[in-house]
Length: 98
Image (cartoon, rainbow, N blue to C red; front, top):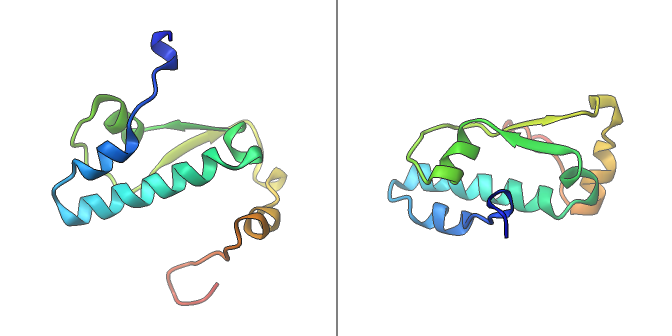
């Protein structure tokens, strides 16, 4: 396995966090990454970047509340309805309305 093929233990990164609020954030990041990795359309098109990537890679305590991705696709190229249909979920915008 080359250095670039190394697999990082995201579950350990989550469980190592002692602060309950930060741990909840890490759990949410884990769910997002799991969902993307299991979506044929998304995992091939999205590249993770930013502080969460660095925190996982270097097992650091960087605090952040967002997760950053880049893609070559335009927003109009994502079939968001298909993503929700396949996942069995509906979007939630934090105001109680889908």
